[in-house]
Image (cartoon, rainbow, N blue to C red; front, side, top):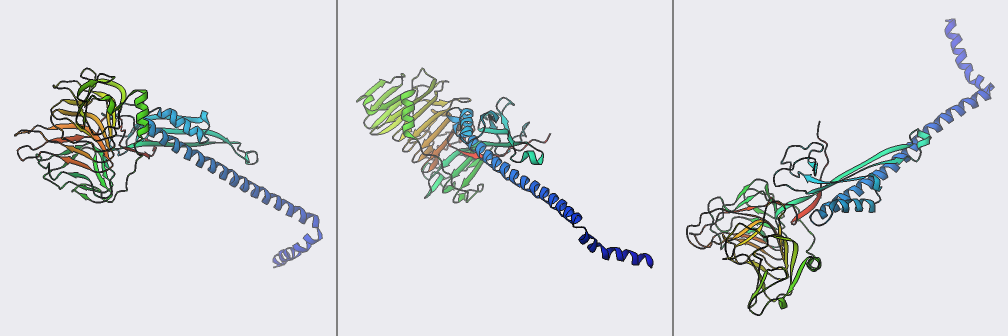
Length: 456
């Protein structure tokens, strides 16, 4: 009992003892304040540095994303790595800390995981899957930043990293029209063999309006990597309705004319004879019949070495034709751009494109595709872009047509895309449209991907 009383007295007397020793009290308060200030300053330094580094990280991430997308846009025309690097520098990224790689991005996880990243592999690091080409640009940044309060918190430098990959989404067929059916089968050229037309490895076939494969007597088959999407409805058992509308940059006709002046030729109505044919600068034939202008490719040239043939101000339709007799040679590596409708002449052998990157590009500010394709027309790597409509119709004359034909072609139309078969019941078509060839250049849309590390 005495012990308890003694302790209580000490407790009760403690405040009075502190009052009697103000120096001890002041020292204790100063110590507490000093400790509190250290904690507050440390927290303030942490907050300042965290905000500063977060701002840097955000700036660098935006910069690498912009650079990657700019590089991807340049994959089909120019120096994608150089463009990406310059855009990164223009966005304030330190030049010595930038890494740019061009490669392949597996947008739909069609293949096994790659060695470093799940869906991306740089050029030269692995053999690409068959028929795949560069479609992506990766930009990485690894930079050392000095902290603002480093001397106080004990860490003077921090490594900031940012990375992005952008790739070209491949569209086998893209119809931009919004007011009517964008992709459809024909009601007139409606006769098909069972299981045709076939769309094989087309990537996305998209319409900004509707897709209707019930017109005529088509028996549409989708194989390989082919996905139907439409902003409106899909009148087919397989397809995604209500997809977002797709927009792409308009055709720059001035750029085509400039390219033709630099590497190719600008061809006007005055370059055509009043009748008959004349050779152009590259040995092709320019022929005229009324308001029909014929462009017959040189029989002896296969590789046109990137030339652009720009047809300007023609007062009629341009008809592209080939050799008079069949053969094994194809014309490739050129662009035709015409300020008029473009069609292909039946009866002449027109063989365009080839393996790998031997692609042919055909642009029209009107329609493409009339009259109809036939067995003499071969597309083995052709990209078609019509400002209006794209008619992909097949009409082989004569009864008993049963042979399957494959056209390796992709197309884009400002209007609609229409697929047609035979005109008569005895002339049923068996056509395969195949979209996997060469670089995924137009029609394509740039999109950011994900860099997910492969589990080791």
